[in-house]
Amino acid sequence: MRARFPDFRLGSVLATSFTGTLSERFGDAVERIPTPHRLIDWLAVNGLAVDSCTTAQLDLARELRESIHAAATAAAIQDALPAPAVHVINDRSAQGRAAAILTPEGKRQWRLGSASGVEDALGVIAADAVSIIAGERDGRLALCASPTCQAAFFDTSQSRSRRWCDMNTCGNRQKKARFHANQRKKPRSAE
Image (cartoon, helix red, strand yellow):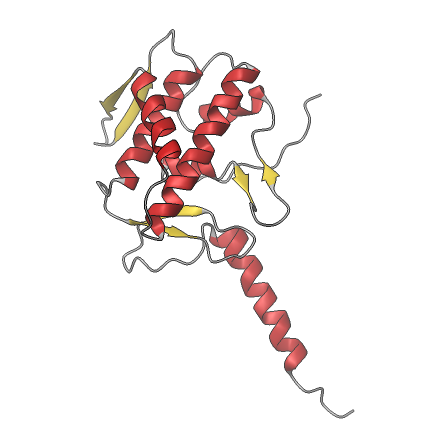
């Protein structure tokens, strides 16, 4: 029987969704890809199915994840991009072999070849990171307002004013905390 792992946080932007495989970075961190098989699961859910993954490939994936997070965080706060992170993202992007294809619905989708491996899937994720960090897509990089999360996310809302990486987790948790704090401040009625 397979161990139960935390659910994936799935978003509409591949690179920032990938960085979400480690959440609550400034609290009780939650690793969502703790094993090579779990990385295979995440890749499959995101249309990048591969047959196998080694521990070394999982390490490459985590290195890419942290590099994307570092570069996206810097971009979100308009700071200089960290050179080591840029180097890892560029290397992974250049090493991947995948093709962008057009779906009948007019959407771009990535196709890995039949002999593709984890490195090819990581190349797709790195290429996606390049496009959002370089500002090539309509939206803006932002950081989650949750003090325990602070995940980088790509805000495509009309006003570009989203505060939370995920309203169902971070946003809801913060709203509940604010509600409970307000309840404690209210004077109790005389009985």
